[in-house]
Length: 300
Ligand code: HEC
Ligand code: HEC
Image (cartoon, rainbow, N blue to C red):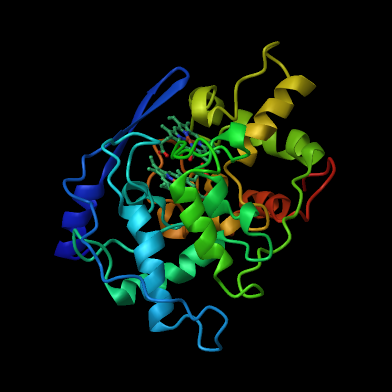
């Protein structure tokens, strides 16, 4: 870590880890002044041009999208924290990890170019309204997806939602099309994934000990003490689905949190590291399920 990133890491540090029976408290260190400095007036996007993204396209992205990521919302909790407080190094190696801003005012143009490649993985130009970038901060009553970072827009009419939608519509229509999403098999989940939660490795404690309820409650112990009912299993399946990017085990939180950082896992997990590397046969088996390749009741 360089001195610069150490300072920034400290700055953006989000202190996680108060876990009582069924409750995870997220505390975020306050970010002093994240509000973006005024930038030159928006340049027209040469969206359909061959040399996309041009300097003007990057400028327009910086003014619309990155400014929104930096917006200080006066809080440090989900739904109120600036997107940038969680979506830089904290989420690495997950998909939506932006560069650590070069200055308090934001990213350098070079950084923005790299961020642009990250952010366009979260959009679907073939059907802009289905972009994850729009659905994650949107309230579920308005059709949004559950988001650890909280709800930012109560409806699709909100100016920020509209501004992002307009930006996505301005991208070349055939360039940033989301890949088809494979389905996660429920039978395989019951037979081969849930046992992982219940059967700790030597010297470890069960996932169920910590993940019994709340936001990360994908592994409540069975009510009858022996095996999960269909109802219980379905709830757990919903819960874990939120932590998975189907087709992409390498960037799914479920596959990263218990994986050792030296083996490509998450920087932080206040729980166990069950897998030392991705070569672990169990990791491979689960990865196959996340890719939609493993179905049915046979685990080996
Ligand atoms: C308190 C921390 C936090 C804040 C603040 C936050 N997020 Fe998140 N976000 C997360 C976490 C953790 C995940 C991964 C788990 C999930 O999807 O809920 C995530 C996931 C996402 C994803 C899905 C990424 C993918 O690879 O599919 C998008 C898109 C997203 N956030 C957008 C935003 C936007 C836009 C903002 C600001 C308006 C924001 N987030 C604010 C924590 C945060
Ligand atoms: C000692 C308690 C503990 C144990 C055991 C534990 N975890 Fe965790 N886990 C946590 C805490 C606390 C968090 C939230 C803070 C963090 O991300 O580190 C968390 C977060 C997670 C997340 C990310 C949740 C989110 O919303 O982004 C996943 C996935 C996860 N754990 C999976 C597992 C799996 C799988 C196991 C069992 C192999 C496990 N954990 C065992 C405490 C634990």
